[in-house]
Every structure is written in structure tokens, then in C-alpha cells.
Image (cartoon, rainbow, N blue to C red; front, side, top):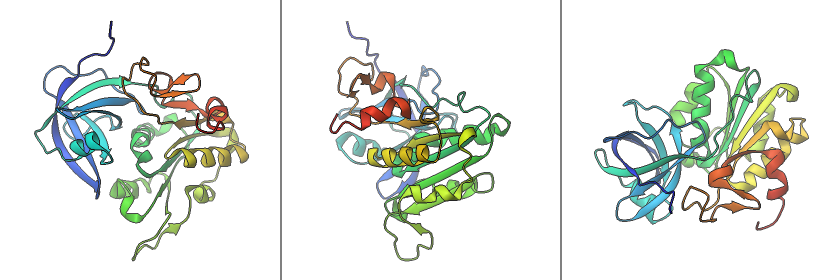
Length: 272
């Protein structure tokens, strides 16, 4: 008997342009609402007549009280979602997966490190820490992208700089770029890292995650306090199809967020 629940209907309440191939959508329920999401969890979003894809929630509450998801057009279904307009209807299942453990970061400095669209599932963490500054220490947000044109949430990142240590870096500059050029680990010197009281949250391409987590542990941050969000091809979101398997883990069920002390031996195995 299948445990996959049918999607609920959600309406596009607003659309925000992020980059040339990336948009953010606020989705509000047409009827019944899904249970609350936590930062780092994801939904399966169904484009009717095309298919469904997993998309992390990029804000827990938008201007209209709905969930916000950020979609990059990279395949048939994500392109269909990218082309949605205000008022269109999609199907939503969720919430799925293990999100960021902010309770484990209570009382710690929180260092958020993102690569590319990996900032999307970390954005609710930034919102949560800024909303409850007494629950944590200092906040650092370090963001890397391929080019300045690939940066998402640019205006919002600038607004965070008044309340957090913010750094942005790109692999390849474009004309007019006056910021830093290089890999995101080069920004670690921006944050006065106190390893004994720091919790780090990392999301981006897998190679970026590996290098960033190694750089953090080399500076003394315990691997158990480095949380990473891993991606695999998720199909059912319920741990039954096996498409998202990473060694003993099914990331739709056991992840996508796991501590680096658990992830490190798995990421060290080539093509696992």
C-alpha cells in the first residue's frame, strides 16, 4: 500500500525575479493547508501535466502568509514551475525531511555558508536567528556564486549586513563588480570564528560542502556542529523508492540535513 499522499492545491500568490533563470514563488492554500514546515525541510511541488520535483522552503511565511519556494529552471518540471504566473495552481506535498537543528545551535554563534541557490534552504535560518537574537550569539552569512548575475536575494543580503557579518564572493566577476573573487571559504576570515561556540550550517554544490566543512573542522569547529544539506535525486520523498540513497541513508527521510561527522565518511566515497 502506498504511503505517498496526494498533493494539495496551492495558488501562486506572488512571483519574484531572482536571476535570469531563478524565481521565488509564494504559495497559499486553495483549501486545506499542509502542516507547518521547519527551516531546511522541503516540499514536492507538482506542475500539473508535467511532473513534480523536491524544492526546499525558502521562507516560512511570505507577504500573503504562504510558503515561499525558490526554483531554478534546470529541467522540464522546474522550467514549468519557473514559468508560473500569479494565480496559477500547483500541487504540494510535505513537509518532508530533516531540517536544520537550530535547538542544537542555541547559545552559539551561527555561521551560515551558502553556495549558489544553496542559500534558499538557509534563508529561513537567517530569518529565524534575526527574529530571535537572544537565542543565539553572533550571526555570520557567507555567500558564494558563479557570477554576480547568479546571486539570489541580493537586496535582502544587503539588508542583513546591519545585523550580521555578511560576505559575498563570486567565481567570475562581471563588468562593474567591485566585490571579492574566489571560493566561499576565502570569506572565513571575515568572521571572528570562535570554534568552541560556533555552529555552522552549509548548503551548496557537494564539492563546495566538502571543502567548506573541511575548512571549518580544520579551524577547530567540531564536525558534529557542522550541519550540511545534501542533495540526491528524490522521487517519492517517503524513503521507499531508493533514488536518494547515500550509503545507509535515504536523504528524503534521514536528511537532507545531517551533521558532518555523519556525512564525512559517506562523502569520502567516490560516486557513492
